[in-house]
Image 1 (cartoon, helix red, strand yellow):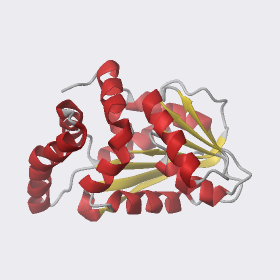
Image 2 (tube, one colour):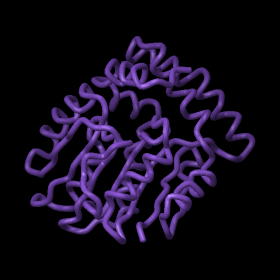
Image 3 (cartoon, one colour):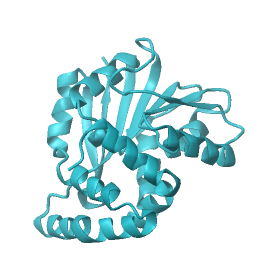
Image 4 (cartoon, helix red, strand yellow):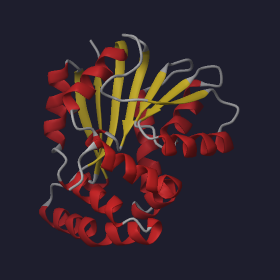
Length: 234
């Protein structure tokens, strides 16, 4: 399994152009429904200051901008420049009239002052972060008191029959479609491993609790193959 920063950088660089299209194919287009639900969980108001981490091609920013209005800047941060470049291209096509900024950065050392944002979102990115405790602490730091963290992440179903079907899908279907779409065998093998090895939903909730978040919880999506985790800064 590839787990160092250079490998993950190269993987996302290689699939940046096809990332959105393949996500839709691999999730049967359900990923858009998940993202919209996560944005609803954010409870955004007009003028809410939002930071989207591991922003990739900017899909969460698209939805967040429409909630906070055209006068409020939504900031996205990602560690991969190719994904950011594709993100700017897509966002300029879809929401050019809105205010957004994408920056290259590290979720373990966020370049923002304490108490800066009303909401922090991260979609399908936390499992790729090596030091999850530090990442969550950084998210907590930059949130305003009363601010909300919303994390959308792939997960493993708990019902035995669904768990078996999910395992077959991850092992055979996902890498095959991913390779056809990108010609990068390693990228979707890595994705498979990152999902299979990600912590259970209950453990991630405890991690939110240990970081200091209150009113934590999670919502299982599509029989548990994805979940929305949330918590509020004291």
